[in-house]
Image (cartoon, rainbow, N blue to C red; front, top):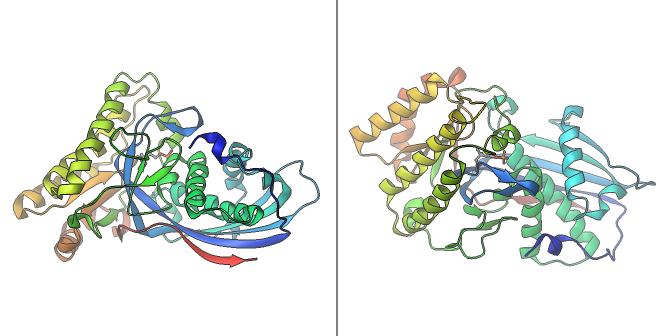
Length: 363
Ligand code: PMV
């Protein structure tokens, strides 16, 4: 598939008004995407677990308008009008207009809510942009008449990517690859694909408890962060390393070797942060409590032989990953030793999920 394959033929159906509601989850990368080219093309492939409980629910209502001159939409978060969200959506609409030519023909009302608190430090861009892309695809599906399920998801992922790169990995589950990799059939820079090979039982229902160390706004926005990779002295080695780590993970997913899994996942998290520490300007996105948690996890692992490990996003919060059969023990450990490092003792228990769902089709 190329970009051109996502430009639709003239629509044959008409549609006056209606609404769709989709829920779409967040995801957590195991091999990280950090660095992009023009048009949100990733510099390296990434792979993520789709989450289950952390999600955005978006209702898109649409009604035909008189003039096609400009985009027209209102945005609401938890019922409250959010004009400060509009520039991001306006930019998104501009980027995707050639793929969804109906955008300027309707007035849209976008009503969105997250299952996780807005001020949790958990980025809502992946779940939010994927939910919105899916709502828009539901409209296009009606205007075209029939489209295959495969095309629907591929194009929704393609559109979500243009909103926020990692959003293209949120539509399906439970493991999604985005970015061309020689050893992963069907992988694409344009959209996320389901990991196409067998995955060992050890990874089924993998758990992710998110420790909210810092609930503030992101210190470094994704856009600024990705741009730090331009001219970064270690960028090329990092991009190659991501390819190698994904190759290694392929064998690990098959064989279920959790010790090797831990090595890749923790190294990827620390490398992401190392890239930010060694860029110009430089940033430290971990907080003292992030390091306290990492050290406690390492100590617990060596004392108990547990397979618990951590990963990080571009922030201070810690994702604690562990197999389902360790759930009771690890939750006890988290409650007794890690919760003290969370802001107001807050954490979110999540696990691997299977992607977005159409909740309401109101035509
Ligand atoms: O999707 P963006 O542009 O917000 O970038 C997300 C990058 C990381 O979350 C740090 C890594 C990843 O692959 O999700």
